[in-house]
Image (cartoon, rainbow, N blue to C red; front, side, top):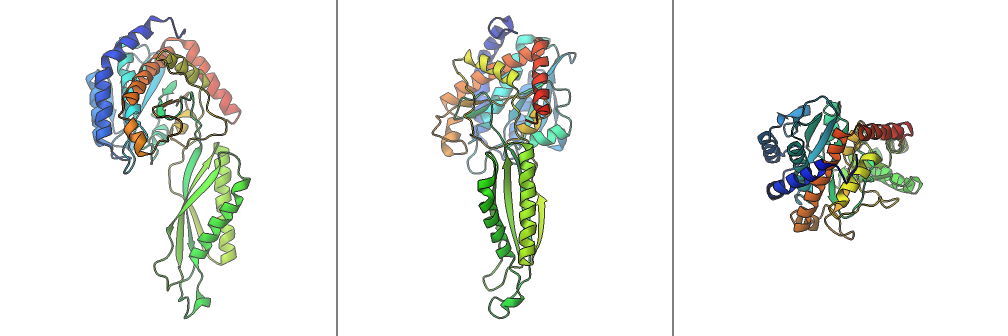
Amino acid sequence: MSTTAHPVYDRIGRETAALSSRLWEVALALHEHPELAFEEHEAAALLTAELEGAGFAVERGVAGMPTAFTARTGDGEGPCVALLLEYDALPDLGHACGHNLIAAAGLGAALALRRALGDVPGTVLAVGTPAEEGGGGKALEVEAGVFDGVDAALMFHPGVHDWSSAPLTAQVQYRVGFRGRAAHPTGNPTEGVDALDALILLFNTLGALQRRRPAGSHIQGIVTEGGRATNIVPEYAEGRFGLRGATGTALDELIEELRRCAEGVARATGTTAVVEQVSTRYGHFRDNEVLSRTFAEHLRHAGITLTEPEPGVYLGSSDIGNVSARVPAIHPFVAILGPDASDHTPAFAEAAASDRGRAVMLAAAEALARTAADVLLDPAVTGAAWADLRDKAAAGL
């Protein structure tokens, strides 16, 4: 469908403008009352009330998460497009990742689209996705079937770049525990088997292997248990390790490397090692070029030009990766600060309540609604988006 000519675009623009004040009130309310992963009760209540009041059929507590929800409208006979709302905040920093803007933009897109289309052909699904910062609400929703039957999953993310897609890696966390034997380091030192020595050796081994890892792959660890007293040889020591790989295959290789190194260290030191997964696994993001290009063309209408990500630069991980492996998905970044800044900082939290943040949120809401309209009204868009996903899956991307 042409991104310049269809009359529904003008209606979406008018409806987004009409909603602008209320959307900004919602964004600021979320910003002023930040809630951590799986604790977003006020946020979920606020967003579902807005959707329910607009005539959406709301289901709360989806996928076993009290703060997750879906809100549905449409005749259900055609394509289904999902608009994703994130709303969890960061400890101590509040909305320093701008999730208040993500939620308001997704809400605005859903409301404007329903108003502009009237009787929606197909389904518009607003999906509340808790715990992106830790816990993986989208991953849990994928496994619970929330995205079954969805033809496009759309969201944007505020950032420090104007990029059409998100270079997001696969990610998981593991715990490694070493068990040795306690002893007095002076009275009977030969009887001790130092578990902390083993853990330190694991850190050193992993560090030595870093230069061999491909771009986008790394292992970062912290010590979570290292002993209780200096006059006792530590019987137990434990570390937590974050593993990231540019693809799921690369992440699998890192997991095997961690296991192999831990087992080797255990044999060398006379300890025993336990290696176990302790977080939800995030898949790498598979950008749907058809939908990303469509969104970028619509956002240009608001005077914002998106470019391709800088080669070799990775911006972390997100549970949107799990969604993108199942359905065509987008996750563009739109800057609310300059490229010398960073998210997860007090400055970014401030920007998420700034005039620039407001303008970006509203522009993204309109572009998301326009892109969703393309999915609903033009079968060629939906078909091409699915073909792109199938091609990437076949290529192992």
